[in-house]
View 1 (cartoon, rainbow over the protein chains, first blue to last red):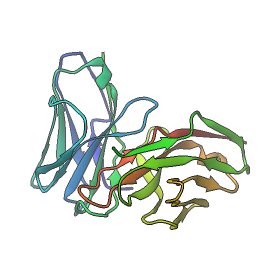
View 2: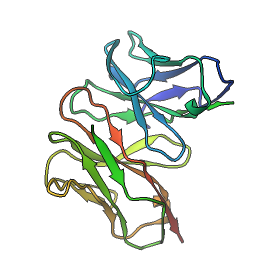
View 3: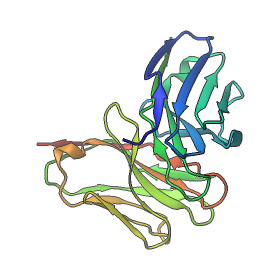
View 4: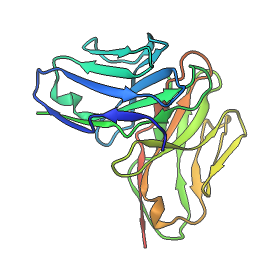
Length: 113
Length: 113
């Protein structure tokens, strides 16, 4: 049990809609990273939040945005959903941004129809 | 940019057989290297890691050695069990900056009784 929880576990949305995914980090962790895992692929880094500030972003368009709250939980928002956004979205928390282990949640399976 | 390459295709083998999954990487500097495992319907779990050249990571009978000269981090296990059936991802993380992970595409391992 890693202590990282994500909600919801599954979600179906229509193309063009907006979606918010949530992540509660492991107790004491102040850093949250989000990854997109398309079917049959490895996870791709979306962005990271450290102490409520964005701390690095992967190759994703601006319609992917995020937030981190004072309790270090985090949200991933995706606007104007496209069919290719269908994927497993993984959240990982860690203590700091240095050489520390990242603990992953079970993910949210998003299907865009 | 940083990248990880895993051998193509699923791996199917019999119980007690020897398992090897190849992983090579491209990165500047001296990244840390990881193997993650993903069981059906779950998130990623860290299997083992190595942080510098010639280090050997090991866990649950799995081993991998950080080979800087060949930029490789191949995963091995001497005698697999049915419970080892999962998807295995090789990943790297730079030593500097944020602790984002770059993953390979993963290999599905199916162990037949």
